[in-house]
Length: 358
Ligand code: KG4
Ligand code: ZN
Image (cartoon, rainbow, N blue to C red; front, side, top):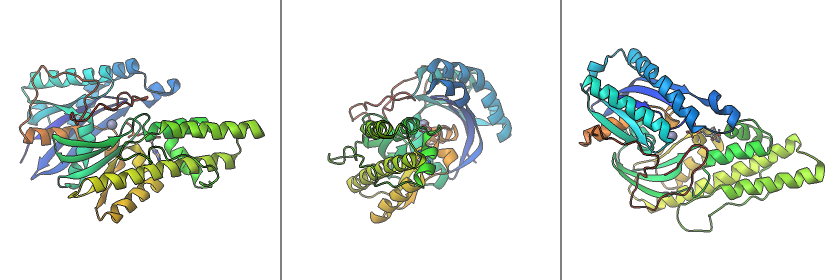
């Protein structure tokens, strides 16, 4: 039986450790511990890098201890240590990389640096054993891109956002119309009672070829609609909130669906169309993506939400796949704030509240 890998994740606002084993190519999660930091950052309206880095440094050791205890294993039972080495907030990535190096050196284990985005992109193989190649749409607060996944080290980026991620847009629009954070679930709830046709919001970049997306103009259009209502009637009524929420959600849905259609058309021979990230929890958006997949005759797959959002099981699994393909890192492994998966493409422009989206 294959030995288990310890995975560490600390690139944003989640400190996570997990132990994952592969038997006959299938993944088995022995433990997955995630310590969130949302309460540390909530007063600031976004993740504060210095606070995040300090919290990771304080929590990583406990997180590793908890992951090993839950798996019922000691360091000597492991086959290696995998760690997110980027992209992300550099202080947090450094904390994880230093912790992993310490464990690997102390226990005499192989070390493997993992690209955080590869962790997300390889999750459908951990959960469902999806065969290469497949299409992955990552849509969260920190990421937004289409990836054709051909192997643990073979990614082609077909397009992505040139500014905000959809999750950021959901959060900002919620703030604009007086709904609570996180904005995505609040907007989805409000939209159920709304009329999506009352406000004519744009579908950015649909007039342009390719799979790139933009969401910041949509947010500005919502701001104008809100300001118009405030000027005319002195504020927003509940129905106004619901109508704006419905119109905004429909616009994001339409953009993601049409760009998915193009991404699927551009990459024949796929085994599946997979989505991951917090925005994939949105039911109308998920239904629209599922419909596009069905139209194209491609199976649709969304991993369970706890494995779609940031976690260390995906990092351990990516480590297993990378080590299986012969990769190892040395003790000179560097923490990288930016690390595009597909280096043949120009870098992405979006930054956003959760750091670089490269
Ligand atoms: O993947 P995630 O949990 O965290 C990272 O980005 O790392 O994604 C969080 C984002 C937030 O912006 C949140 O508003 C959005 O996902 N989100 C949703 C929904 N649930 C969470 N967006 C739309 N509809 C939802 N139901
Ligand atoms: Zn992530």
